[in-house]
Image (cartoon, rainbow, N blue to C red; front, side):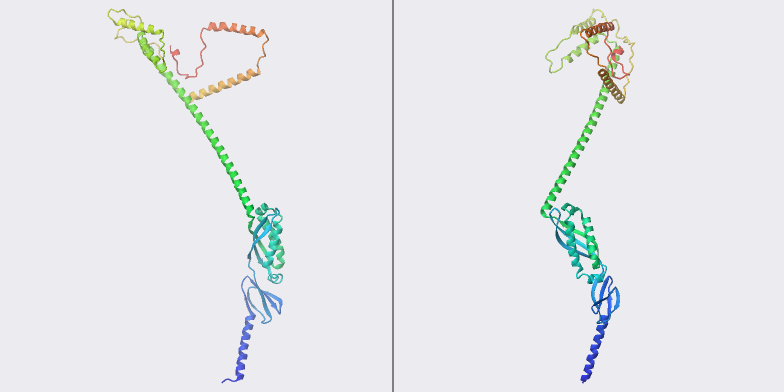
Amino acid sequence: MPQPQDIALYIVLILLIAFVATAVAKAIRIVPQATAIIVERLGRYNRTLDAGLHVLIPFIDKARSNVDLREQVVSFPPQPVITSDNLVVSIDTVIYFQPTDPKAATYEIANYIQGIEQLTVTTLRNVIGSLDLEQTLTSRDQINGQLRGVLDDATGRWGIRVNRVELKAIDPPASVQDSMEKQMRAERDRRAAILNAEGVKQSQILTAEGEKQAQILRAEGTAQSAILEAQGEARAILQVFDAIHKGNPDSKLLAYQYLQTLPQIAQGESNKLWVVPTELTKALSGIGNALGADAPGGSSLDGPSAGISADAEPPTSEFEVEEPALEDPREALRRAREEAQGATEEAERSTHRSRRTAPSAPSPGGGGDRGDEGRQHAAPATEESGAPEPSATTGDEHSTGPGSAS
């Protein structure tokens, strides 16, 4: 059985081992990366421990606090701020800061996060109080710069560096938001109306341009069609006239054709009265003479075919008509346009000259004599000519009419 002295020795040995273990634990400190530990010796600042292994004096050196050297982000709750136009705006802020001096952050201020929050609120009210609502909503960069400058200057002696300040949200009152939405809706409606009007304008312009081009093309088509029809009719008339001259018709054939044409004159639903031409009796007498010549004992007929046997060849006409050549419709249209343009310019020049050189009003008695004298001189010229003046033609230069052929 152990003696009391041995028991006391064991207790002292155990206490000594515990003391040594505690002293060793307090003497050895391992500091993590991006962390600083403030060490106090007998209650007074001694040194700052950086990352790594450090040895302290047990029961003399004491670790005061651990300071995180990484950049920290703190979001503050919404703060009511009054603008210069007396509107209450709720603003949320976010602060990005980083401790640069662990000693100052520990001894210069008790709680640097709370100090940054209160400083941010007061600075924000000073900055927003000088701006109206519209400037507050559109000047976020300016507000952020002012807040960062003020906070950086104030927190520099605390060992804190403010890297960035952001306004997370700016919420105006509900009534103001409703008014802003109505204003924005009215602005968008105005823009939509302007765009719609511009579209209608462009549509009408394009429609008018299209109608103009269509009318021009229709006019050109009508002109070409009229030119081709005129050329076709001229060629048909020339061919018929040439055939008539080559066939050498007599009065009997002409009278027969005349009688066949008379019913066509009476065609029409609105014809109530049929006027018989005076040449009808001559046509009938010609037919009667032809029938009398065919009767037995009839006398011979006077005419171009009198005394010509049936087997005899019809006389050929010495008149030859050139084959009409059709002109290109584009060339004819171009020439017609040039003639119309020339006539228009000539009319404008004549009007201009007549306006510049307009004669003064004739004196009583004098102008009448000169007018009578002019008419007396003009009358013989008209009587001597004996024929009407030829009219201007715009047809094909290569085609010839019946008058030229005869």
